Image (cartoon, rainbow, N blue to C red; front, side, top):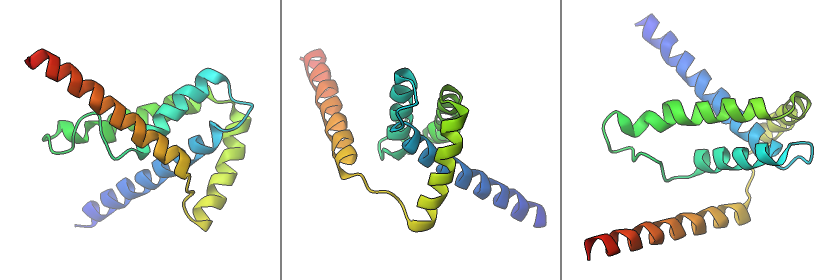
Length: 133
């Protein structure tokens, strides 16, 4: 029983660290010292991590959680490697301050991602409609 508790605590700590890294990336993509290609990739990672829509829906057994367990951490790790170390260090300090105050709210970015998902749904729907006809 003690081993299960330790393993669960380890998973919870890892999860908290990943959430913190997402906030680091959220701050980093807005920094002018970050190259454009790193910004583009980082925006995609942050959007995917914050998005309620998954690449693989969670209701699919085992595969549904694959993106949460593999794709998101891999994307975070890759994005962190693209960003200069000094920017990451600065953003980690700022992310810790944000964590202590509460989550950031960016309604414009949220609305943008919702519009993008809706447009993607219409695009996929139109493809399916043409294919079925």
